[in-house]
Picture 1 (cartoon, rainbow, N blue to C red):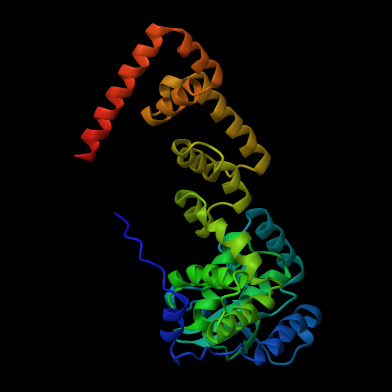
Picture 2: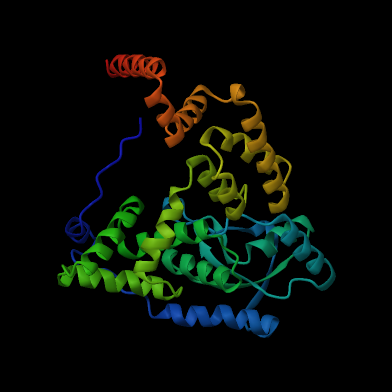
Length: 337
């Protein structure tokens, strides 16, 4: 059984921060780091300090609490195109890496690195910088967002992770805090501490052109995707847009459809057709559905206005329905025991 912990109040959140009510401001250097990323994109090898480093000396970004490379899904077709380009033209944009425990970590450029490994290149061009965990994560997010590479769940997860690092609080408390802050502002019940927290949160989000209200209203609900689909997106096994399609199916049909989509590497169009077939089979063969779905389907038919009008006019059918209600109550009472 999953035990859900009650979210912290804003006051608890403030008092539990590492420096009392103080929250670290957004580092001023980050604007310069963003400019460096853009400079790397535009000038490539003209940037000073490029080193040629063997691919086996590099590793993906790894940050405390399981955070790392914001992008988990690497589109196979896109990777194939990039690999072809590198094969013919070489790597045109240096990787941005940082020194960390265990070696050099890739802050920006994991796709290029993966292609270099597949192509068995001897070296890849890199620019080595010193980044803290929160700087590295923000720069990785900026680099991916410049290319619009992240799906909405990856972006939401990593923005929450960035706020976790900035605010020094457990990741699971962040969504609840954001909801409380949004509601407090709407109800005009902000005090100085809450106002300061809103400023800190919006400083983080503003770097990505997102407001607190938008993040709470449009981004947090994405994390309510059924767990089997949410995990698949987070692990990079399927695209977010495909997971959204599968989520429209009854819960008992989602896992098998997901497996088919992954194994066959279905395109979005092929997945839509597959889903239509799954729905048709379920409709044509209701006896093959799980008991829960059969009962739900029968209930939907019984509760229609036309059905109830007929029941009201047929005394025998009405008595049978009343007996059915009694039996259902007995089952519920037994389950309660």
